[in-house]
Length: 165
Image (cartoon, rainbow, N blue to C red; front, side):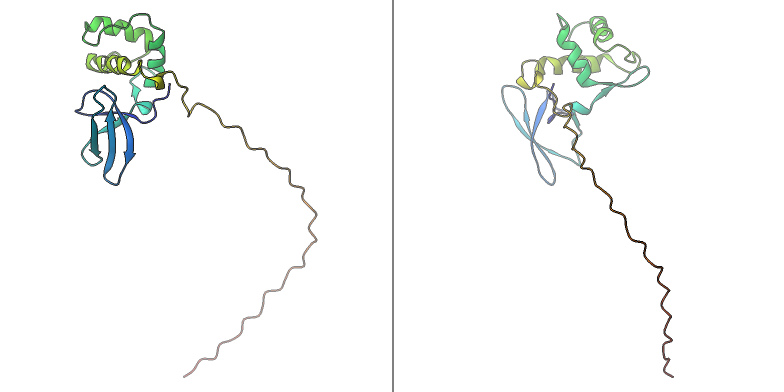
């Protein structure tokens, strides 16, 4: 799943795609049918990249991308406005080991809503470009030639400077 450039903006519904960056912030476009454009100022807007979001876990945090991948395999995803109990059951399946005290119903609703937005997009089925490993560069063998021993040079005598009075 390729979520590079997809962000959530605090206080704004839905998801946004980062189109460009200028010195004061980002130019974003909504992922809905309206394709609304927004300039998000870095000093005032709280922007979170989806590929960097984690979910509180009992032992270690879970990556959002991993949870969304597991959600692909689930046959029926409940409506984001569904009962909290249904959402909690879903999260026990797709995010095993999540901290049930720290992951609130509002967080689960938001993630299910994001999943519903992303599942229709082609980037949802693209491989993550950061997961691809570049081939290791071939190392050339360097043959070391024997170096002739050099005689130690004696330190040069310091010249006394004439002091003018």
